[in-house]
Image (cartoon, rainbow, N blue to C red):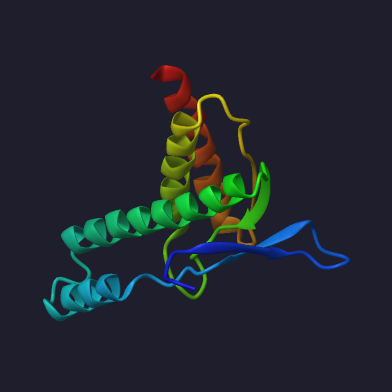
Length: 146
């Protein structure tokens, strides 16, 4: 599978109808950019942290948009998932949740007449709960304020 992609596979006898296989590895060009940022010596600076968070949120948005597209194409409207890319990929929960919120908002706007996705995020680390709740509030506020 390509970086930041999702594909659905058939669930087994004890599994749900479908299981999403999600690749959270960033594309090579992103890894190269992170290496360049590290080599440039500004690691630890506020500017570096800001750039990494923005990049992480963008990657998360692309990843979640890919997943939502696969779900819709398969006619599925409900998904339960962990905070994707916070483990081995190492993205922070706040930037992952910000990208998730942006992807969900874009999905709602692009599919005005379609059923809404039912999304459940399983937070396996206590530190992920607040960013996930903040993302939910952000989506609701942005939906109703705009």
